[in-house]
Image (cartoon, rainbow, N blue to C red; front, side, top):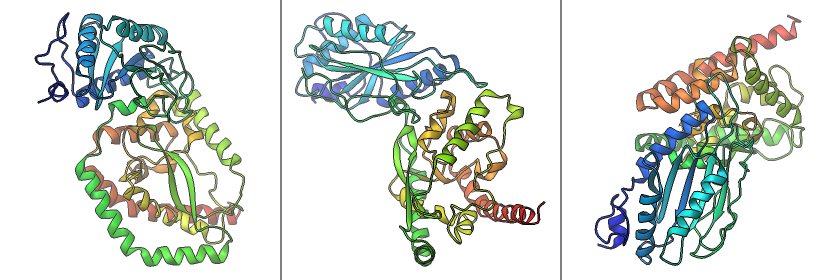
Length: 420
């Protein structure tokens, strides 16, 4: 068995570093639990925490680098800090109580300086800090100094504090593992919270595949009829694609049947939603406004028959393809638009702790009659209490909710038409 294989067994046995004690290293799942705990604590208190990722590239090729690194970590880190896997050939150090990004970068540089084996690994420092307060505790609103990263290597001291570049997504900048001795390079945005996430439960993924596949087959005539209807009543594409924020802050393209005219101005909706969320963040909860849709009633932007498709939620059916692509689930929070998330307090990013869904606890608990904060709490509750039977209950209640929604909107439309 190679050193890398033994090391992945959680504790370093044999081949001890030349100096110092041997460090116990958590599994990826255990380390994820520690990161999630600190993320939740930071959301409540506003106290920052930092994670240093050391990219080892290839443990089996360079085992002596991992030996040396673990020996230094055992001597340098405090007993309150944690060390664990962030992935294959990547070891993370969770710094609890570090004062600033600069201090965390200094720790990373000191660890590299104390290493005696060459070449030295590349590191990335992630942070969650400087949050906004809310009635649920202090937060760390994305893109508002909520998080950042610094990157460096054994011969490149380029660590600098940063702010979350993924404004509105809850995302932090990170780096892909790069070659030893290479200067760390900017890379696609990844998520700090992704470190604390676990895979979708097997029962849930199985349910998604079965339901989505069966539904697509049974509803194929309806898909064809709706596509022909849209083509007849309005020039332009059948489907509407829009960027949304999903699990762990990941961005993806959501599919819908197009129910609005092409090239309409979306600024009105953006301002309306942002103002709704802002007012909820700044007001007392008993003054929160319900999340009434902007297009309630007659809307000139909607194509003929589009209002019916929206009331009946038929326009959402193409998201079954998102479910098969594992971007969404049948049950989960509704995925928000990036400009909505730009107004979130940190605790509200807990909506991204589970995969977004076609239906969810919020939809069957009152939906548009509830305020934004109530929606966020219900979505977070679902993430924490997710179970097979809860999903079944939500799916069972959804058709009745859609029928009630259609009837309710019809009543409102009749009142508006009569001047009531």
